[in-house]
Image (tube, rainbow, N blue to C red):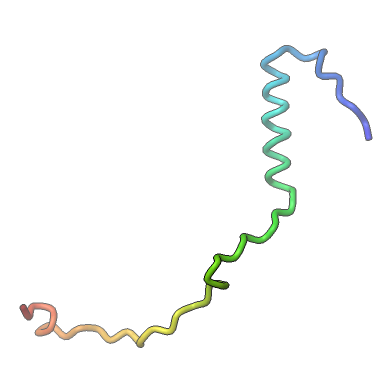
Length: 61
């Protein structure tokens, strides 16, 4: 692999290059899957089908 001579760049350009390198690492590295919680894996919950309220039910109190 080729090495870079950062000493030829001014300080602000060296910082910018390091920031860009960190950006590329985050963008292209494979990240491990998130850890599961202690209670077990998350699963979708079953919910009742949506039933819209009638006009009378909305204004009922």
